[in-house]
Length: 161
Ligand SMILES: CC(C)(COP(=O)(O)OP(=O)(O)OC[C@H]1O[C@@H](n2cnc3c(N)ncnc32)[C@H](O)[C@@H]1OP(=O)(O)O)[C@@H](O)C(=O)NCCC(=O)NCCS
Image (cartoon, rainbow, N blue to C red):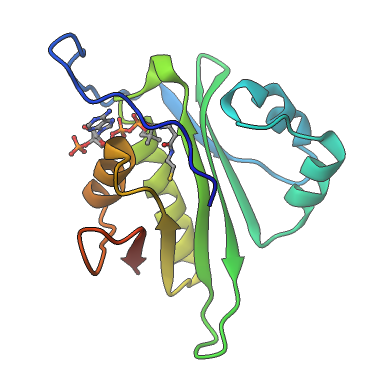
């Protein structure tokens, strides 16, 4: 997985963390690629409308957007993978990001919970995600939502469903 900028550690000026009901999480459906294009500023690389269209038309792909007042402020995307040891799929959580201004308000947590809820519903065996162990925000996010690693230095977090 591509690594993103390492977030700043919490300092004495950080606002207290609040979980807000004002955020809506929605899974994009086929044909909604314009929402991915509209949310370009959240993504490391500019989305291509045709690629986004193909991505959403593949039911193995999950693209969740978090909205605040109609504006996209966070996203998560993952792809369901088949296995040969089990007929159940694994979900690879490939990317998650929240706009800087909206971080530490529970949006990342809501996005992960929504993915877990979806994966349980469709019968996935597990969800996995890779991150840099030095990415404090990501490690806290994945740990506090139930992801586990085999060793503290492990890059892979697994959610057993
Ligand atoms: C990682 C990221 C998605 C977290 O999103 P977020 O909306 O700020 O996360 P939440 O507000 O739901 O916080 C989740 C947990 O992480 C903790 N956390 C978030 N940012 C943190 C930071 N900078 N330092 C320490 N802890 C942090 C929160 O306190 C919370 O822990 P808790 O549940 O134990 O209180 C966000 O920081 C981000 O977009 N980072 C850049 C992209 C990135 O690194 N993505 C991950 C790549 S694998």
